[in-house]
Length: 136
Image (cartoon, rainbow, N blue to C red; front, side, top):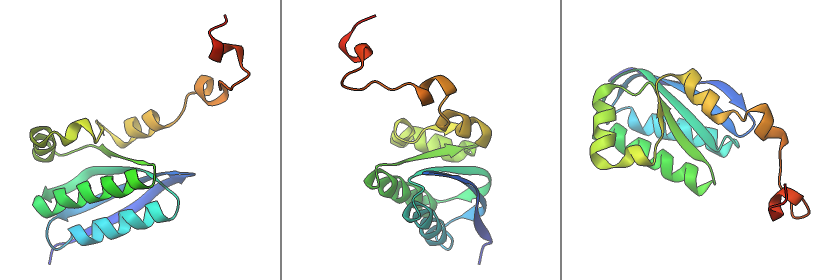
């Protein structure tokens, strides 16, 4: 049996960052899926998976990522990947899933991409807002 664990390090509102460690294979993929879906069920519909410490990923692990992506989308959320191992990134590119699953060089980069800047966090355009009608 291979050793695998998923640890949620950062949870903030509807965003969670989880670190995967070990082999992602037929024995461990169900654990990854179950733990990731538990985070989504807890209200963290935007999930970042840090794969920096994943040492191996077979088709079962790949399928688990696809399943997590689908469940996140069904919850009106997203799945992003960080520090994707080269072989897995190649598979994502070959299958076209790299267009659906954004990948970032590091977990910090992924978090920064999901954190609204102060300008966009406070700016809104409502029905009565002149900006929404093209006025300057």
